[in-house]
Amino acid sequence: MSCILRLTLLLGANAAGNFKLKPIALYRTKERGQPSLQDYHVFFKNVAGHYISPFHDIPLKVDSKEENGIPTKKARNDEYENLFNMVVEIATKEPLNPIKQDVKNGKLRYTANIFPHKDYIWNYGSKVLSRGEVIHVKILGVLSLIDEGETDWKLIAINANDPEASKFHDIGDVKKFKPGYLEATLNWFRVYKVPEGKPENQFAFNGEFKNKAFALEVIKSTHECWKALLMKKCSAGAINCTNVQVCDSPFHCTQDEARSLVESVSFSLNEESNEEEQA
Image (cartoon, rainbow, N blue to C red):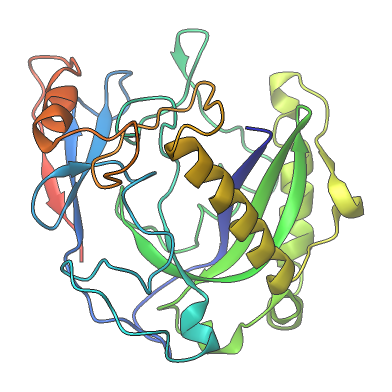
């Protein structure tokens, strides 16, 4: 693919907001291996307990066939129409796309501290979430990062259940209510790879944050690219397209095959495997 779509939560989430959704245990996670080791993986299961790919089997939009398998009603208003599912940092090149830590030159890869920030500037959301948690977000805008010659779209969003979510509708609201957030984000993305000996990153549109309407068009375009990948209408390159729920996809696998893929992942024998359920 010629571009990457990633989502950056500038604002965190607690427990309130005009669009607070009733917690339903739609997904759970299955850990194999131990954190901070290379063989650690976090796989996803649906409400029925079957393994799925968070990349391919979790709907893009919240207003989809996802609540206990029952189709939801049509979006009630524009704000509800703007709700998307977010999953953080999956392994796109591995079967079923689990969560795992990046490895570089045989060692675990960590993000360098960029003064005055420690690790990621926003932790992909300022509230610490559970590993593998799927959350509902409102899209506010997008930044076009040029990362080593590749377009890497950075979506700006807020958790729909954040106490301040009702105030944020577009990128201008971030500038209004959180002055300095966007400037700090731009600078962090510019220099975060410099400690690795790489040059500063560049940006399209002179580093301008585009608004919600522009961001939604980017999402629409990249979603069409994803559908083409799943239907094998274009080359997926290194991206693994194995899925469980897109039945007409050439990459579709059965529940038994998905379970076998997970069980084939080796991990240290003296480590336990844990399972978590998310609401």
